[in-house]
Amino acid sequence: MNGIEKYKDLSKDELVRVLEARDRREVTRLGLIWEASEIERDKALNVDFVALDLLPELSVGAASWRNLIIEGDNFDALRFLRMVFSARVKCILIDPPYNTGNRDFIYNDRFVEKEHLWRHSMWLEFMFQRLTLARDLLRNDGVILVHVGEEEVDHLGCLMDMVFPGKKVGKFVWRTRSGARVSKNHFLSIDHEYILCYANDGFEFAGSAKTFADYSNPDDDPRGDWANFNLTKGQSYRERPRSYFPLQNPETGVWYPCNPDRVWAYSSLTRIKPGQRLVGMSMEDVIREKKVLWPKEDKVVNFESLDSLYSAIDSGTAPRHLRRGLPDLDFWVGKEIGFGMPRYKMHKSELEATHNPLSTWLASGGEETDNKDEIETETETETLTVGTTAEGASLLTAMLGTKEFAYPKPLTLTQALVQQTTRPNDIVLDFFAGSGTTGHAVLAQNCEDEGNRRFILVSNTEATIQEPEKNICRDVTRVRVKKAIEGYAHTTKKGLKEVQGLGGDFAYLSCRKIPPGRLTEISHEEIWTALQLIHCSTLQPFNNDSFLWAGDDNLAIVYVPRFNRGDVSALRKSLIPCRSAILYSWQPEVVAQSLIGLEQVQYEAIPESLARRFGQKE
Image: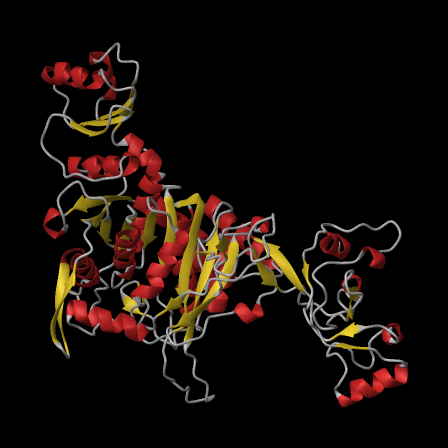
């Protein structure tokens, strides 16, 4: 296609947009640019309407259902979810295709091969369209966690910075396998993956509760329990000269040299210049408040001359923090010098937080995660111990009896992330649901802490021209979550093992696209599904009553599919006790005229109100 042919079908306004987009690219000095059409992108968002068809025969548990499994292209599903779940999701946890070129990324019903000229542009546009929709679903304290491999981690980081500007939290690293898979070209085993984390301002990880096992009060300190902590911090004397000074025990007169590689955690008033002031406590304050734990029965030395000090340094018999080349070594001549190291008396009442922050390192089961010898302050970090992909594969094989799904994430990893990012009543979304690990993890965490979290899983069929009957959502995602709920049996080396179900439910739904200008063809069932998801926390199937009711007396949701004046009395009687109600109807003006006097009722037109929420103009 030559240059003219490429633009011949564009209107004047569309051509102006193309030129404006090109100008923006040309002035960009730092950022990520890929081949894409903004016009086609915008058209794809709202050119058609997406509805969901409820399939009770594939759902699990009795209605009303709390959880959702949605079959369909996740771009379509996200457009629908933006209409009904905008700003309501606490955690989005996704594992998109890594774009390795090994038949893992399907674009327009075909796998993208490693040699494809626009492979990375196609992947970036695919992800951009979905991430921009997902962004609108997050609560003001929401978080999104995205799994990614080495192939696209750098591109994804730039993309996430564009979609979630200023929202970057960090990047987790986890070891995917215990063995080695050495590359042919460089003799390097890449046995890790990443989880990129972006969040809105109100988000915090749960961390881990401090045990306070090290706190006690052996000296009956009236300030309460305390623990023995390091009195130094991780900067050198060149970096923090105000914190590098000799320290004297006022009771014994013994002096203690500062570690030149880890200076005192508090600065001294003797080290500040005129006009300067310290923020927080000085070392003099710390000593005065008896917060220093001085060495007991300490070995002490006294050097009569600088030469004798140098000799002791050279022979290794001087206190360990004295060495040649340090400033003011002559200060130590004639002083009683201790060999021990003063420590800090940390009172439990001083602690600002009752939890330790989360570490970005996700350790495998065999790794050592204890960092108590590394403590610089009162805060340790919580390092999550998770499994490898082998654990995920083993569990999926036990549940489904198949090894067809490659490299599923371990349940321990996903559940740990759910536990760290959510509270008991939150909503978790995974729109690359795959084998259903996220749904399983939400159920497992609910079982563990008696929570009421809800999951929304979106999974495509992944059918291709070669495999038109393939349906990952129905045959893998759904089946795995069903077995997690109901329990399953599998054969081990010791015989048949029964695994108890976690309980729960889900409604199974399927995406349907309604062509432009034909929204009036939407079914009553699809309308009732959408209205419940907008306003309620559970979903019930449609029935053929003259009007349908959901919610409670504080806020009732009513849908009138076919208005019949003979139903006015029953409808009025139902609405009178409600403090507030929203009534949806194809004839809202007619219904409102029949219910005059019910000031608490708000009337909405169908399908116009849904089109407006979706972003369409009717």
